[in-house]
Amino acid sequence: MSRFLSGRYAELVPYVPGEQPKDNKYIKLNTNESPFPPSPKAVAAGREALEKLNLYSDPSCYALIRAVSELYGVSVECVICSNGSDEVLSWAFAAFCCEGRPAVFPDVTYGFYPVFAAQNGVPYKIVPLKEDFSVDTGEMKKEKGTLFIANPNAPTGIALKADVIEEIVRADPERIVVVDEAYVDFGAESVVSLVLKYENLLVTQTFSKSRSMAGARLGLGFASPALIRDLETIRCSINPYNVGTVAQAMGIGALSDNEYMLDNCREICENRAYTVSALSALGFEMTDSSANFIFVRHPDIGGEELYQKLREKGILVRHFSRPDRIKDYNRITVGSIDQMKALVKAAAEIL
Ligand code: PMP
Image 1 (cartoon, rainbow, N blue to C red):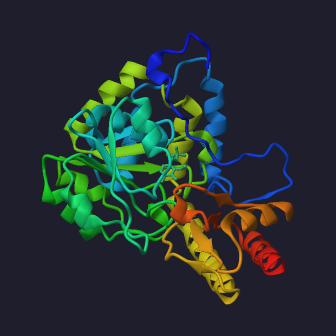
Image 2: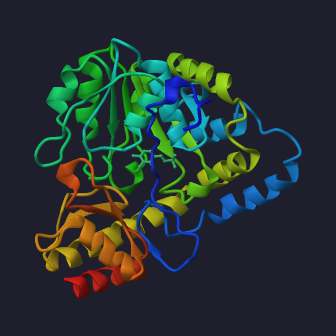
């Protein structure tokens, strides 16, 4: 830290993203990317947009928001576009949390949440997951702060049903519930349509996972028009050109090819089923995942050791040492079937 850094940030501990190795020698199963390229329609639209890079991007994301609104069946006033869904999540911490209204989320969830809270200078409160790693919806419901629920949760992959989420939203109209649906397309139920019904619901989604566009940085927020206006205030006070021209064009291309996304998700779900059964046969234990990753441990080997040994064999997975109760687990992205076969083979050799 230099002597110039504002005291505001003296204690800030940044989020550490999963490793992005510079060489290509690893089978990368550590950051939940898609093994498939973006839709050819997205790529073509992105290429065409390159010619327009002399101009600023459309700060209103007009055409992209129209495409989102048509596909998701919500009005354009209910949509906001962000630079990855991390950005809209960060705005939500800034806009909807404060002293007396802390952010509330589980102990085992997306590791960026406490960092968003710290960076935005807002308090947060932890409601631990139950013993079986499911969200303690009863306890969450009692909280008065702004709830952040990743559905499916990460890194567990466990999903809540839409009606359970609706119950939480309905339980207190004075409290905002943010549902982070980064992984929803891999087998969970989306609550996007509920934003038409509830003023206190914000749903975030991303093009990074099911739409194979992690590098484009494109995310979405869905909410009532009043909440979207609040988020717009934050957005336009930081960077109104937050989504580049190429990302906007690729987003429109990707949405016009929804079948491509659905096919890829089907394939990932098949590969997940294969991996779950092959690893179970080797004695691995795992949570019931509705995401493009699985969360596994083995009674005969520690999480850190398995991570290191897989790494030596050229396979990168994600190991978290904190909180302690997940130190024996690894989160493994579900990739192509060949990648999953290589993973199973390596795990069998290590055991
Ligand atoms: N939510 C969760 C639960 C995630 O795991 C991620 C990816 N790290 C994100 C949101 C943000 O992804 P992106 O910014 O790429 O949309």
